Image (cartoon, rainbow, N blue to C red; front, side):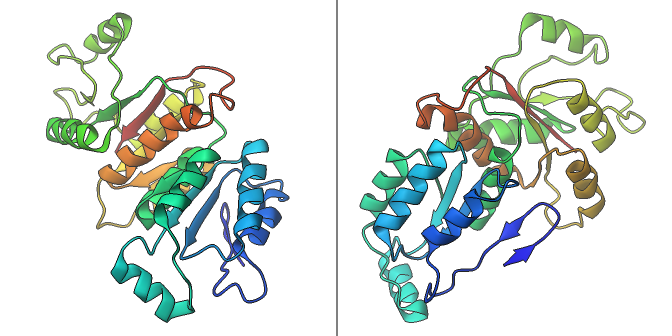
Length: 267
């Protein structure tokens, strides 16, 4: 087990002594657990896993799963690596769907989705808004959002009017290029501005950085201190947002106590 400031990680390995479901049960008894993220090759104790994933749903703890071994090449690798038999992917997917778990396709999606679902502000089915400092990135987000199945909710008329005041030459839309003419002097799209916005609303939001090749430590630490999710990479963010917003529907709306529109900002 490894523990950081906000993440507790367990490594089951070949599950010789402890199986994935037993780690899940232990995690669910920890008062700090908000979500469970699983990277698995196989499920060695199928009945135990079914009980644990059902228990997580009952306790309102989201479970996010990245399952390898879905192709012949990957299944052979899993068997040669740990002796794991990957099993039937359709059956496994049906089990996840039955208990409202979220299936993802990469480690980046696993961590990004679990990060959003672990946030104390609950997801909604109403879509989200994206604010960037680049018109080009707005267009890219629109294209990628359509491909990934994310939902950009239309801005309300009162929101459009409010945005016109600081940006009179812009045409408010969602995604929104939120930089004004004095973009090089504006503090509108800084981390501090995003955290201030988070402090005056009860809506879920997160900060996205598209600078995947640069250190993000200072920004990440600021967001962590304010309990604001920080995600690197636009596709990771759009996929996580889609999973975040669709989670209540996957669980029959049981976890939604108040409708909120999710928003996120980019720096």
